Image 1 (cartoon, rainbow, N blue to C red):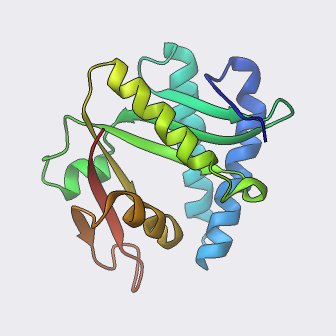
Image 2 (spheres, one colour):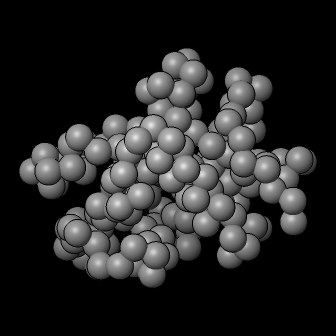
Image 3 (cartoon, rainbow, N blue to C red):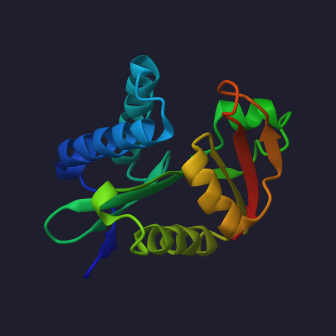
Length: 175
């Protein structure tokens, strides 16, 4: 499969909005929380706002990369300031770090190495900027398993943060 990692353009916004809705809806369904429609919509709106910040600031406020097959966008990743959740739940310890987020791969393209390709690409951007550590968080159990394999035990575990059995995990990562 020929995947190109590139910066998004304004012309990608509509496709990326559909992409976010597809991936987030699929994730909520797989996590067993598909009935939490308000939270799902908030998550989609947040990702759309992050994309808008990237496009408006030309990557200064948020910085996205997308995985493109030439026919459609099948993955995304971004960096930006650590979220309020990360800042608050770590008592400000990770406040100065950039957060890697919006690591999404279309359901039809998962487990094909696209996530790893996106992660390596965004780490390259961080290295080019002279940044050697960042943070990443997740409340999705399926993603947490991936991040544990890749980055080890999380630095912070917020037990039952999203409800019983739904922890939130935060990693501080050396790039």
